[in-house]
Length: 389
Length: 122
Image: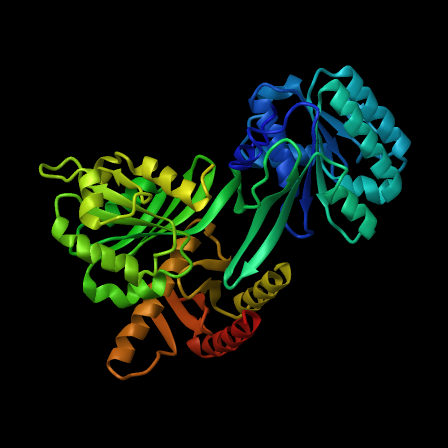
């Protein structure tokens, strides 16, 4: 198995890409699809694999710069990463790379180099930086024939082949083949504009080794960092003095609050970058006089933390009401049983009982001020938002 | 989607070109950033959230005392001005102006842009 290096995608694919298989990242024009191939290069190297990156649309130096921008240390993988340069010959420049395609507008020259690599190198991950560029230069039919052949060879020699492909207006037949039978797996990458959420998503269109769930995930590209699953809004709500702000600050990589006299009057806003996820956290005020603002700001949430003070069961009614005004029913939510360190704190099971909660709603014990349990709670909620595998 | 975003980018770029404007951003009414032109990108998401809170709080406050819906929120400090205007039911525009700039032209252009943003997003 080779890991794609993209959070959740490996999980969806049952661990990654098995040896001998091919995969295409099929992007709409205008989205950052080409990063996916690069992320897979890094995913392979990190696990000790060997990688070949076929550079077609820009200079290898630029790719190396991009890698630096992502903050990935490539020096330690120098002997494990090879470039195939098919760009410099095109513009008539000299190339220092080990492998060079001397005539990149003729598919035969590609064939020779790629076949050579497949036969000589130990099982590796071979990533094509831009299949669409090769197609533009060598012709659609010719390129598809060659790809079909490389995929077969890779199967026999136990390589993993990964292609970045941008769906420019090629012939219907070509696009159908690429989305259909040509590869073992197809990952689609596109953009959405749903009301005011603008974003990029990826989803699995097909995979012949894993059961495909049709779910798609929003992502964004962080520099440094790479591809992160993006969750634009997670709401943190709960009654007065339950510890909402403390929770937001404990969880966030960076956070700000609008506090007066020790209570939140406007909101808390935090940003979390954790285990391949990037999320923005909105914390509401708890006191009833702020309810109009809560209603205003709670729209478009993708999940909710409901914070309760475990020592104060009289507030549970208010807590339930807050789920109501934030219109959180129907969204994935997790109950945070805060202040577990205090004497008289109810156990999660007791809270569930007093709350009359359905069995499937998680109640997570937390001590927000000591950051105890906050990341566990984050993982539980993320799992529910992403449909946990 | 890229078309819509391109239009938002163009609109923000035009607004940024108005004399005295230091930065501007578009956000949703509930505080999610759509796009921005800003020096310090790191805090722009928080700015979007806080600006939406201010405008929302202002609307709640004025409607409760029969003042109707506010046209805009202007925050003045020693170092500059922060202006937030609604742009239709779903979005708002945020603008940072330096302290010496006159507001006349800026407000005029800001209102025009808000109208455009409303059209773009519907």
